[in-house]
Length: 256
Image (tube, rainbow, N blue to C red; front, side):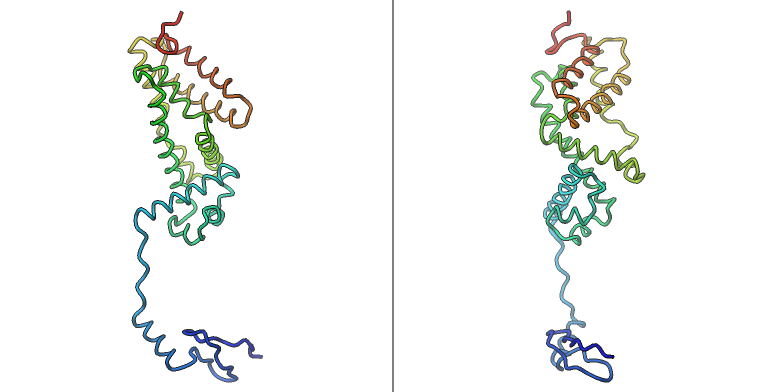
């Protein structure tokens, strides 16, 4: 039995007369048929691509939406649809800027790392009264991996979500857990410089000390996020280990 639902003109959407035999018409008049023909022969120009600045801004909005979901619910909850809803855009917009979930995760991680590095440089520069004070410099560097303010707390939660995801996502792990160890290299360099300046114990291995400090401060930061340790306790633990390394106290005063 033929469906009684009335079809509509493909141009003006006016209802078409019902037919009982043959192929149903697509247009309500010869005028609409002519318009359809002209459109096929001369299609409208494609919409202009977004300006580079607008595209970059929208990509950042989407990345920030992913960060918020990751910090609160983990990366498993950050589907492209959920990210679109959090960013206040359509799913197609997210797919336009990021052609896959993996690309979205990687791009958002890269942007987060760039943000962290930029803010870290500013904070470390502001914290150092004397740039040559290796102990103060190292303390400031390690502080960037502790939840000392809302920005660092949120960033650590997002990075923890990435770490958890990397355990079951080899493609993400290859990006998140790369072979380079820039933080350990930086810390080892500061300790080596202090040894050459005579402000750090000469018998220490800078690389081993850097590995212990980085691993230790990372674990302490996670404890602080969970509320297992107070920031005062974390600070005391960090200062204890710095006291083992440096032969001078805070401010460069010789230890007694």
